[in-house]
Image (cartoon, rainbow, N blue to C red; front, side):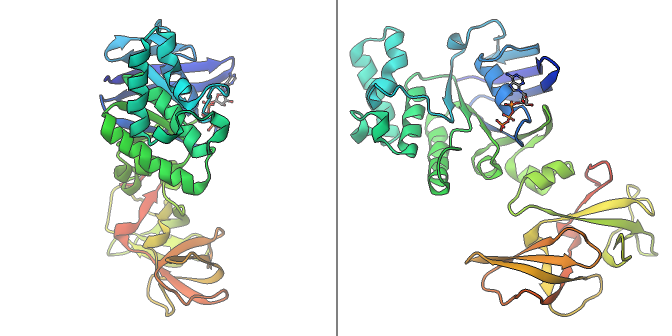
Length: 362
Ligand code: ATP
């Protein structure tokens, strides 16, 4: 078991700076998820920890020991890849025991460790099969089993569930969470899927263009995103951003829609909000109240698409003076139809405000 410390890590590929000055400590036994859009540098960062990618500058410590000059095989880590990377000609048991065999571990010990990992992953019945005789989910479980038998100090997962269909992904997500509970080992997990990040992580690290945008527990990031990027990245369906500006009034600033001057939210006076300031009003789809009748400060709009998802419905609303459709999530059975006029109301407690630099306004 071990902590992992990244100190000012940089990785350049020629002129491309894939990782720019990343500092972070993953505590012993913590499950940290690196998440971000394609190309943000999350796989490169993981591969630097694994020793598969040279570090351009900065320092890496595993269990307090400097690792920059330590070979991948000697870092006490095991990595699980998206592609499974199983040996096709070997059985499940041989695949799982291969690394131990290479280390010269005796046969009885290999069998014992493979059986132990197979029991954890419910692979006991499949030990004699070849990878081609397994489903995608079973193959990924073998790949995880192969990592477990090595009893690493740190597990690294690189998008391990991306090749699976949605149902299997959800199931494997639960299995990885249980595995972390059971093994109590440090894990770093890379994904572009914010649902995986939200559900698995003790702590999420959101990366963008090689830098950390924000880190914290899933709920901290969800409830208090530090900037528009994080706010828009976490949450499904995504947060709405409505362009407004601040108008002074005797009781405090009022946010009004840019093009129509329609007031939609009253705020209490704050030194952070100057008259005339452009502010993006961020609101999650399930936090918007919808009514058929007009109310003060409600934003009128017309429903252009309704998606019925069973337990909830998504309404896409063309709101007056707002270019992008506003997404509204309604729970339970709804009677809304395309073409209907609705009035959208925002509660101050549910609203996130972002300045023109994208940063959260306190
Ligand atoms: P994805 O989710 O698409 O895998 P990622 O966040 O894992 O993306 P990386 O694979 O870490 O992103 O890549 C980060 C950046 O570094 C990208 O701009 C990529 O094009 C670049 N890059 C990665 N590997 C190399 C390489 N070997 N040579 C040159 N550029 C590279």
